[in-house]
Amino acid sequence: MQPIRLCSLLFALALFACAEPDTQLVAAQSSALSYSAAAGKALFEQPLPSTNGRACATCHVLEDDTTLKPEHVARLLREDPGNPLFDRLDADDPDAPLLTFEHLEKGLVRVGLQLADNVDVIDVEGRVITRPDRQIFVWRGVPTVANTAFTGPYQADGREPTLEQQARSAILSHSAGDEVAAKQLRRIAAFEQSTFSSPRAWFVSRMLELGVPEVDVPVPEDFMRLTEQEQRGRKVYDAACEACHGGATTDRIVDREAVDFLFPVLTEGGNVRYQVTQGQPPEPMHTSRPGVDFMNVGFGAASYFGQTGVDTSAFNASVELPRYRLRFYRDASRREALVDLPPTPVTVSGDPFDPRPALDAQGAPIVGGNLIPQQFTTDPGRAAITGDPADFEAFDVPQLRGIAKTAPYFHDNMRETLEQVVDDYSRFVLLFIKPLGFQPHPPEQEGGRREALSPEEKADLLAYLRRL
Image 1 (cartoon, rainbow, N blue to C red):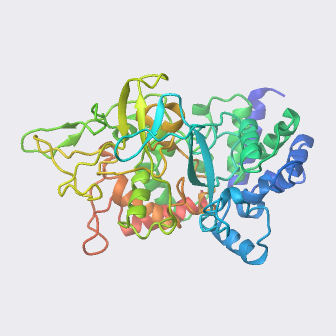
Image 2 (tube, rainbow, N blue to C red):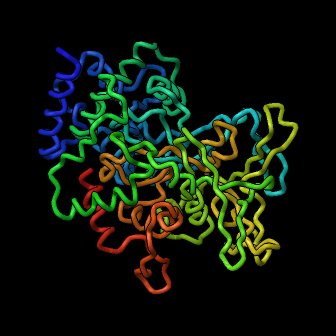
Image 3 (tube, rainbow, N blue to C red):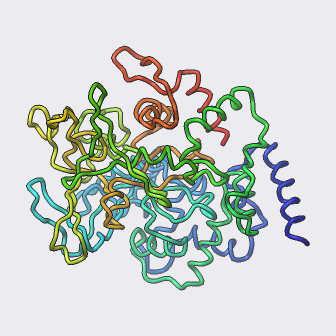
């Protein structure tokens, strides 16, 4: 069969699928799995020998769209406290005589990261306190494996280039297992690559498998039968979300001009460099990082506020997250320091936890990359892997298909609902990205922040995202 004809047939099939209600984990629940994927599903569901009893499905729960939902953890802890999920590895304090699992009850698992060779951990006085094994530990949510056929690299910081390597790392760490044969890893990956949130996601994957360049893959949502509200929501999506989540895969940056506003220029001290024009408010200076698909949208700062009591609404505010500062060096010898991040807070009162920044001689705020005085980070993101200060608190751009099924949200489950996510973007992100062109709406509540989206626009966007 000619490739063009095959593509046409697949596209016609996708159009039909788009008109039908989406099914959950489409291929994973089908009886038509390939032998390799079917064998991988068995490996995914059953613990391997020499492990702590955990399987992939222990944390990537099949009936919960291969995520780890807080309600699932709470039910298991109540009904089956001996379940392998409740291993000492993910206890709040693994060394405590009586183990508790409050982090797990938020859907969070402990993740160990090996620091880049040019990075150290420092304390608030700037003294190096890196562990001998050069690891740090952070708490992160469990991402779905749906649509991973086209959404690599993997993990929130992109540290795993392939699904095989991701599975190997999970078995060695979270399951405390031994090395696994390459054939078994390939089969697990084959199962994960057969798992999709909808027929539309399957269609995108199939086009890419056939060699269609990503930019030429038709966006299947263009052919969906939408309600009037969903049609309005699609327009809001195009204006508010497409810059970072555009294209057929919904996880690729397509508007570099807009995204550049998320990459501030830093001084040697780690603070943002501002452009000061007489009679105008100081403006952060921006740089471009072509080809980089990891961004600091500012939600590391939101988790920081949750830990310091400023934002008690954060879903993870009730559990204690790590507090890190990192020193970056010019090279792996770690002799010449480049920058400490977050930079030492400079505040109006002198209290390092004061959220009000001091101003420099030109009247510009003295702040780090999150545009706030910040004493620590709860998760340095990709920078721990790359050793690049520009990657500090930067995370992967996630794909959005099936997003309504994968709460809580962000790398550390900071937000419990999709409504809260949309609120955050409306209040804290979209107005800041000037090329998007949003004009401020009045606060929805007295004393609140200005909004990029009206209440009606937010409701419309949510309707579309729930369909996506």
